[in-house]
Length: 402
Ligand SMILES: C[S@@+](CC[C@H](N)C(=O)[O-])C[C@H]1O[C@@H](n2cnc3c(N)ncnc32)[C@H](O)[C@@H]1O
Image (tube, rainbow, N blue to C red; front, side, top):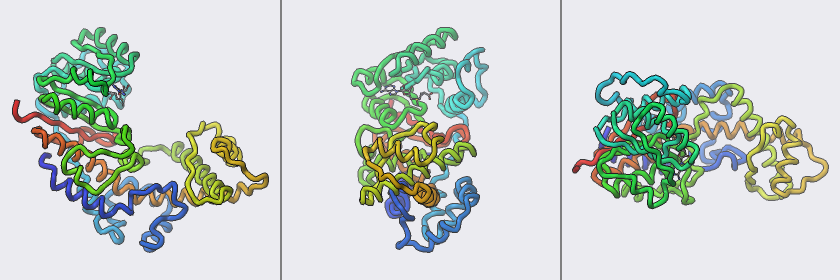
């Protein structure tokens, strides 16, 4: 799919017009935030059972339809966030992989890598693997594309392990131990080259796109992830159309595309319910004790701390925040507050869920616009199914003029 601007403009308008439904922190709110603006929506949300919420989380189309009385744009947002599955590029059959190529690659990672490989055109160009980790992808590309690979990675141990694996298989792969942000790393980006990055976080894949366009690289293929891992406090749009947008995205907003509760199992969901209820219960308690109706973030907690119960959690959190608790506290009451707030957070997150993929596509299209503005022909699609990885969007760009 190419020529993204109309979609970008529509997403931008719908996301901007409907900011009140997704651009806030459910955690910090003590009540459903639409009580006065949309009481009917709040009644509907309060009436949902846990099972109904779980069902809507699995069925985005049904969620969009159900929300449409209060959010008329919901079905359109759902439609706009549908992506074509990428067809395998070139010869659909995979090469016979050399024995041992998949050694040390967890099953799901192997599926991601082989899917990424199938969707990546073989351009007969040397390959640069950006933020390579142990270079799992680089090894598959070296075999499949029959091209030399340079794998750039920041962690020395990963470079060493990747180097051992490449030598064992006698593949033409060279590891470069370097920080992708260092200006010197740009020298590894060449004009006659195909740069790739699978799941390089936030600014790391953005840095690659910038280096590739500056150095007139022939082709780049990336699958972005962790949009919130940026060095600035807010998102800096890359494209001209992105820069004209009214949207200001904080790191909290940028986490939204990654919030996929769907894949979590029963046990993980139970654990999350306990932890979030404890945190929200403590938050209500601290607001009361401090006499200040503001949210107080509490650091990460060891699971063992949760097993010790709510009262113990509150004492631990109070100590972390240097807050003196009164000697007599009705912990039962505050835990109940936390559980009620958890239920409201779940319901607010359900509404935010509708905007998760549209916001991700807005970010993707900002990257697409940036590349197109610099003379690249760009295509975008899903390179694998969501269960293989929810970060399944692939951007492929080729320079038109060299
Ligand atoms: C999410 S992992 C992806 C690894 C690999 N591409 C994959 O899909 O398995 C991100 C990688 O980026 C590397 N990384 C983080 N910061 C970096 C930097 N400043 N320069 C180079 N690599 C970096 C990490 O060490 C890690 O190996």
